[in-house]
Length: 112
Image 1: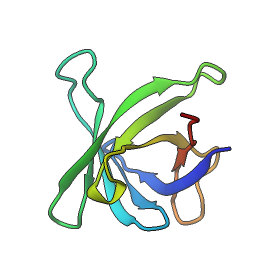
Image 2: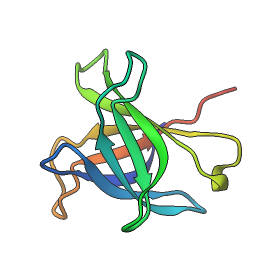
Image 3: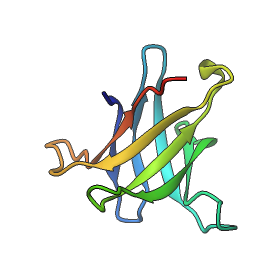
Image 4: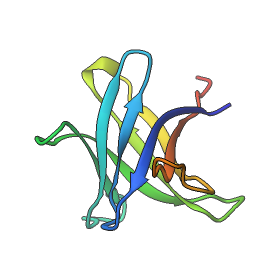
C-alpha cells in the first residue's frame, strides 16, 4: 500500500512546487531539473525553504514498467528523519485537482 506524502504542481519550467507532510514534518519543497553531470547523477535536485533554498535531496527520472509513464524517484534526507532517507515516487495524477495539483509523492514501506 502506497501512502501519499505530498502534493505538487508542475510549473512551465519543468520544476515542481509543493509540500511534503509526515506525522512530524511539514516542508515546502521545490524540485528543480538539473543537467546531469554523469550517467548516475540525479535529473532533479530537491530544495526546502522559503526564499533561501537548502538542498535536501535528489530525484531520478524512471519509466514505469507496467504503464510506460515517467515518474521521479525521490531521495530526501533531513535531521528529522535520522540516518534514513525518505524515498518516494513523484507520479502524475490522471487529472489535475481544482487547486492545480498535478503530481503526488507516494511512499511505500519496504520490508527489511
